[in-house]
Image: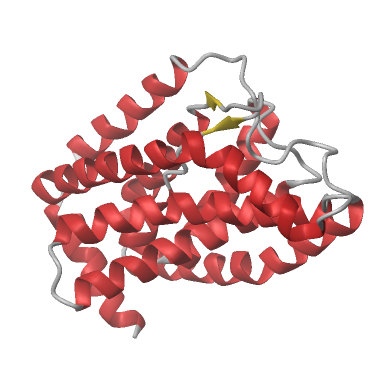
Length: 247
């Protein structure tokens, strides 16, 4: 438990070192037309409701896991605040949702990811309130569900644990950006080529910086997971017991 607190403190210190001036990759405030803001908010809502029930069950059955819930939330907050300018003047960044999805499931991470995005919009001007639904759908819904699915497939097929964790975090990162590219392409289709041409443009823009970031996030997530395995084994055992109870 003490080492878990040290990890959270380290993540907070890392956040304080992040420069305040940044190019927001989360879709910025006022960028999407109102109909798309409402659509993505509506699509995200069921996952958030599901996630609230999931967290309620976790906290009621295993209150000792509150600290670990805070850790995965802080991990996502810090990583997704580390912004790297892209070739267009926008930016790319890690998402940090893979770790929480692996440990607690994708629904729980949908709520934690939504909290991360809300606080980033309010405190860091990273993203926006009107575009919160779209950003939640890409980073807090698609990312965690992809990460969790990839982890289960590799884990159940007998693959090494490190590969399952790495692939989950990296692909959850990449699919977040693929989803964002679709969202932008739907809202701003190319004048001559339509949605598909616009999609190719957005995907090409983000691929330059996002591919190496996805690999880096995968490696970092493996490192954090190994630290938790070594120093927070009791909490991880509680998670396994909880998963069996949820079936």
